[in-house]
Length: 447
Image (cartoon, rainbow, N blue to C red; front, side):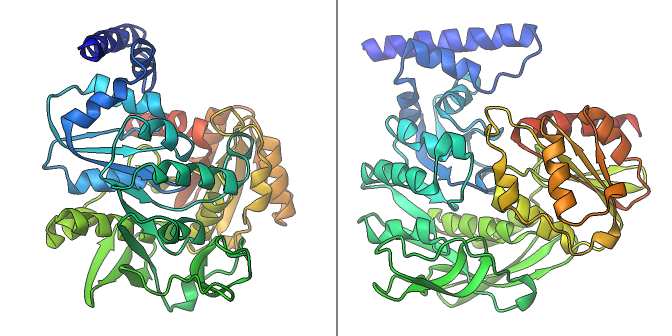
């Protein structure tokens, strides 16, 4: 009874905060949940009683895309979800404060990997989908082994949760050998040399510490591998991408499951998106969602909030790609390198707390574009504009192509007037929402 009373007051105060936020024209994706949690620290438990099934999506990269893709497929159901990417405990709480109902078919939440332990102390998920683990925000998370250990300790306390694991990531797949939960795996087994890279970042088996050998590498430390000592390998996956055929604007992805093959045309490129699609396909199959509906929804999916979002401006396209860690920036560079249209690139590099104050990660990323002759200018802005400009200099970019702007708005204004076919805008996390809204406004006013 006491907890119900506390929940009631927490909800009232949280909703009241939204009223005041609206007065000052503030969005508040976390504040209402923060004040609700101050009233009742276990406020999140109420979601367990309201949702028939709860699905959490965690990992370093791909959480927002995966969450949005799941929501697209389940749009005919009642769903509670943090679609705007507020993925810490206060963000999840805010989602319920803003969208309070007595019943949902699904609660689907993107969860910051560093917040999984706090959130699962209250939320009891039916499924957890783990996308990957990469080095990210070193000053906040520390080295990758620390955050992996935290996630594993959280999962150990959830023996009934079903895990959807990216088996191509040894750090993720090792969980399947350390717990007794039901595990469903996904990954890739592609043969085209065109889309393979060789930038391994792991050479020790996460289980025994001996040498790990790769037979194929997709990107980062993802690929097909086996340990020469303990035979840890990912040869047997439940859902496997067996072919990827990329054009400039989309990719045809073929997924094999139980010797049945499905092909879907996903309207965005990037190997990481192939993984996202395969993981979501596996989850939907486990939920019993009809396959044709899943495939149709994937083909109709559109990004929002700056994740590969594309705008039409005058006679050119503007594409925004979030870049917040070495792997993400390297994959954005790969996309640009495979695009031979005339183009300009805008980097907006911030080092605010939410970005991570340590921006040395850009030096771990591959930012060398092999088609530099198709790139008219590199514009650099944000709090650490000079640092990314220096990185481009070390990429052997001609100095006359590199431009530094102290004001990111002036940087964007200049870049989008270049005589090119496409402008790639690569902001870090704290820059993406303002940049996206600014470009959206520019586009609307140009019509």
